Length: 628
Image (cartoon, rainbow, N blue to C red; front, side, top):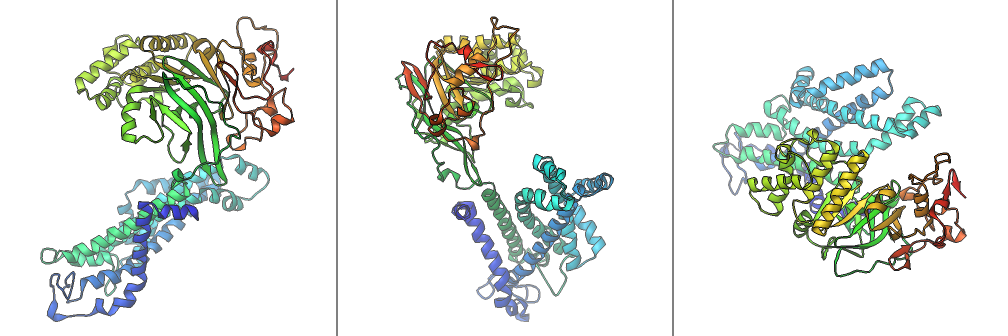
């Protein structure tokens, strides 16, 4: 209920609720209060314009148009709701039948739905009107069945996405029948989007039904709805425009009410409303010992958390991360997949969107608080002083625009350069990242670049401004070693020439140790060790990663070193140290108390109750199949 009340407090939710309440109230009470006024014929006031006696004028029989519009609310809304119910039920049956029928019959139903979806909705409405006949009943079925194909396609797509899940396969193996499988396992998991689309579809049905009545094949005399009133008022629109405008405005407002309510329901069901007002419960039991903040700090992060809502509470994949990046410094962030490396980089770049919630005791970039600075003011800073190099530049570049124009857009937006000057600067930046024939390449599309060249172009886009920080999120993934070396050299040269700080996110601890001055080792959403690259690791996880790294001195006859077990899921982080179940040195204290990130040296921090002694080589930490 709290989410619904929060939705009603938003401008859209409040307006939608008020408008729908007004429409429903008129549908219930207008015929009771003003039925006689709406049918009262006054031959002395035929075809008059607005006046004190008749606010919207009268029709060709002298009946008050305002009262008729108000009374028509009930029939208009009722018929739209009935058509929506018919369309939703029919669509749901057609959409879920393929999962119940044998394969040939399922293909036949799917093909029929695909053919129906290909036709415009208005043609379907007119087609079914011919079949079911002119009048109220025929129009209800025509509009309802015209809505069914689109709803069937939606239900079919959603059902197919759920039918492939493991829990559905497990239910099939256990002998659950098809109907029970549909009712118990599939429909409950697709109900939310179906409800949202049904609510929005009611507005479309209202408009379609009014259109049929306007054309004279919907509601027939003596009954009338907004569409019929609109058709009657159109004949005298030059004498009394209000006669046509009033029912038209009523249709628009009622349709808007249904659509806005659908959007509000979607916001509540999708947990998109009011989440910024909720603070995720702290997960880290002990504060990290944050690194010293110096005057030359480019990025300062203290107790960063990223949380995602779920029905049972919050999932916190990044929990209490603290670090500082100084000007010209290269920091590597390493860890297994799912450790929170990339999400941390996105959070400090303000690229994590709702429904996620990002909180921090302190998050400053170039002296500006990232979380509290207005979007307009922060956009210029991030657009010129922070560069982001993503893992797959093919998805980061717009495939329909030329590379040069995409780079030039940065200069046009943030530096105010004219189009020609911005393109010249884009060509210059491509030359700076060693792309041959830069002017010709700038006129090519992303698919015409190789993987390594796209990565260089991404770095060139970051250099369109004057970046103080480059965040490279696994930029060498899926590239051959030669191209990897070229990219790493390019980042190093950029850092040396411009005093640019670099955060290199990677799963390859060997690459990071050779490229960066300092490493942040992340596990289960938090930093477990912050150490100089040349230092001896003290945390068991860091030592295990080092032990699993191959080099030229690795014994090829020996079994490969592995880290036993798997990292915990973000919503299932155990009490105590998250690495305890995989650690050969874990004790009961490790499983009960989560250690804070504390100093063990001048620039060395470790989150471990029993850090390894400096004298123990990292290669002895892990052996094949488990710990020694």
